[in-house]
Image 1 (cartoon, rainbow, N blue to C red):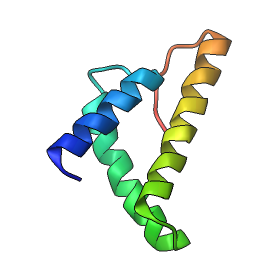
Image 2 (image 1 turned 90 degrees about the vertical axis):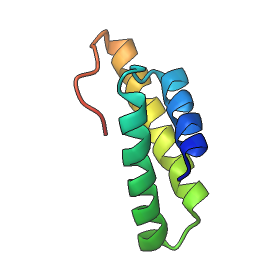
Image 3 (image 1 turned 180 degrees about the vertical axis):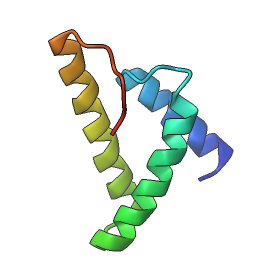
Image 4 (image 1 turned 45 degrees about the vertical axis):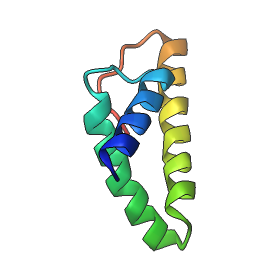
Length: 74
C-alpha cells in the first residue's frame, strides 16, 4: 500500500469511528490482513479490504450503541 493509500484508509477508519491517533497503525494492519485474506479466500485485495472495513464499522457502531469506549480493535 502506498503512503497515499494508507492515508486514505486511515481517513476512512476515522470516519468510521477509529481514534485518529490509532488510524495509521490500523490502516497498516488492515492492509496486511487484507492481503492475507485475499490469498486465503481467492478474492481480490479490494474485496478483502472492504470486508475488513465493514467489520470495523460494525464493531465501532456496536460499541457506540452500548455506550462503551473502544478498548481494542478487530
